[in-house]
Length: 186
Image (cartoon, rainbow, N blue to C red):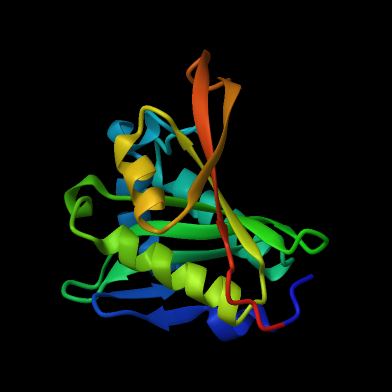
């Protein structure tokens, strides 16, 4: 269990974005993301075929957050108030004081620095407010954008993992990265 009230971090503002808890009003934007085959070529997850599936996804995410299984934020672009992605702290491990970070961004908003802004904000909150000592990112080795993103955020390569992707029915080569809190004052 994290040592702070997670609800305190349900909404965060950055220069261009609002990272916040998902609401039912986000269904259309999240469906657009979760229904994009381009995004799912690197994910071991099912694409949503209907908005009802997206509603179920949002309900599961919010339920897991209430149960302190993870912290998930939708990424809303301030200029047009559109949800353009999600970022999540999952696999929170109290013993190792670590969490994994997972993220996805709508293709129309990629390569503009928005996910970098989100990841850097979540890393700062993870270390400064939640007291975590390390963040773990696992990316498909073919996903050069995600690899570049985590490397630009000072994550360091640790190892290669080979994993069977049950959705695509192929073995994938994953890169594991770790970001260590070098300024932990807890």
